[in-house]
Image (cartoon, rainbow, N blue to C red; front, side):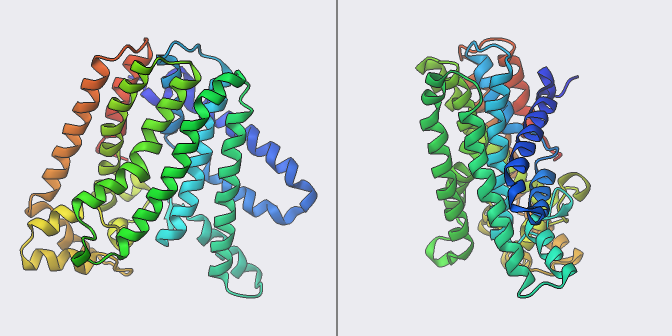
Length: 358
């Protein structure tokens, strides 16, 4: 069975757009000299491969509203991959992540370059600055891809307010996530309710709802279809992030590209953590708190935290939430006026976005 992300050869077509666009940007930067090459290589590596989930939702939002399979919509949809790259670059800096997709995170890679060359100053500070600038470039280039996609100007202007809303709300969601990591439990920090608010604005909307709406708006979708897209996308976006949170603790590093338990190591307050602490006895709560934010988390402490999450029923609760939200998404799509083959692909994307493997 064809992976829904590969229908219409979409992933390889998005990669071609990204490769061409980065080649264009490399030519623009040539007058600055060869010093920019490592920064561009970092961006190129980050944008090579991946699920291409966000471009897929934009593309199928377009097709579901009657849009034809034309190169211009692939170009526009690829803008979401550069926006995702910007978010990942900045997120890894904020989380002090060591890896991304099994390789050194951009700020670690650039810090290593500094060290290898024996440059002046602090290598970590240099790496952080370089990664932030790489993210800023991707943010700018994402807008270029949409604006110069070749689609009708009126279509782009229809979709631009949603694209701009996505950028603003993601940055707000990122800040809420940063705040959540430092807010004491006595002030409500880490509660399931607060964490789910972060999920909506840091992940659910920009991962699924906004790309889907932009695709529909580019194709001139009627209000009732756009409303159906939102009803489908929001629960699916939350389920997608909940699955990511489970994988961040229980996932196989060979599939996730992150060390085992990396979300705990980074101190991420997730719904899984919140539900565990709410249900835990003193020993179980201590096991989770001992692992949370522990930079040198070892296998024994990770196993103890996993055992607490399982024994308290928190893991089963989150799995139940994922299943319920995914079903809400399917139910919303079932009654939506979506053209084929988009309807079938969007149904299949529910499973692809919530699969138990990375």
